[in-house]
Image (tube, rainbow, N blue to C red; front, side):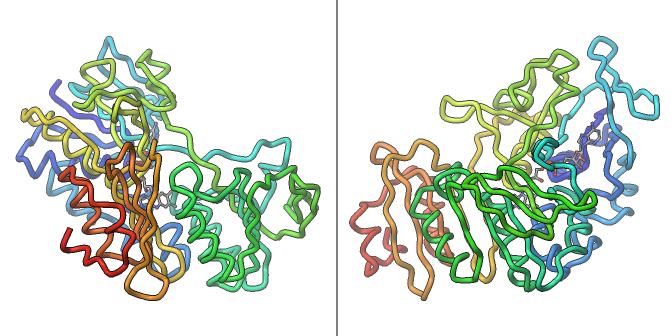
Length: 402
Ligand code: FAD
């Protein structure tokens, strides 16, 4: 069977099939997604969609007619439960089996929950991954209520911005020393901390959650790691995700919190590729998972070219963005392993950029309301050129001259 079976119906799955058809590869394709919607964009779920400024139909990549026109057999509301590698077939939760020539895993990731023992299952405790999560949460975000946000990563910070904008009281706790510690330098944490505290978020770093307090099965408060108790109406948990690699693991494919793939996107089984949030890939002699739209799309498109017969290697060019209040943060490159940062004040009030160096080489730029720093930084990283640190730091330097 020549059929391509795609497991998952998110960003990576859509990018894969769209590119495959754009390359005029017309092999039979079946897309199986356990969600009730056609593929849609996730980033607005913690931004404009949560603010109720966007509706689900505007998040869809394509309308239903597109899938029919491109001969994509779509199975919504169905889960793939098992992979039989010997028979080259998958089993769905309704017992049906689908034979594949190539199997594409684009299953994404699942938010980590708080342990049940500290109240993770109480009513009023939310994680945010799909549109139903966002709908439920939006229904609870009423002015004057007190939201506790657990986790100072991008999801937590974006949720805090939405909650404040909607008139809620917000306490955000981060167990690590500083917010966005895993993904950004301390200079960027400093800028984001100032932003949120200036908007009235009660931001507490180095503070964990001891346990939630309940009344009639619903959260009503929280005891923090420092012994403080606060009253709480709802809790938003943004403490990271785990890759949806279970079916791969069960089938004996190599995984490490994600399906391990090579630069062709192939797993340890040559007939099975994986991409997006569920994949672990080689990057600068590390194995990493990149949870971003850019990675999901670029990796899926490279894999589509491979499937269509044009050998294509995937070298990630990380790019990420985040919207918080009226601030746009854009990140070019990958700051992991940096040993020095340079902060540059922007042209406008409140704009700035943080430049990351590793052994003297520019590796990443965080631009805060500073599109020019982002564009120039991205180009410099892509071409492998490293600007002088003193020139970057000097606000009089015209970035374009670099
Ligand atoms: P997903 O989009 O998660 O798709 C996976 C799909 O597979 C899901 O529909 C899932 O239900 C389905 N599935 C899983 N297992 C099975 C199975 N066994 N059978 C059938 N279907 C299955 N990235 C950015 O770059 N910028 C941002 O600003 C940004 N903001 C974000 C905000 C939010 C709230 C979230 C949740 C994510 C955000 N991201 C952002 C990350 C980005 O959305 C993800 O990196 C991207 O969606 C990954 O695409 P994917 O296709 O790998 O996974």
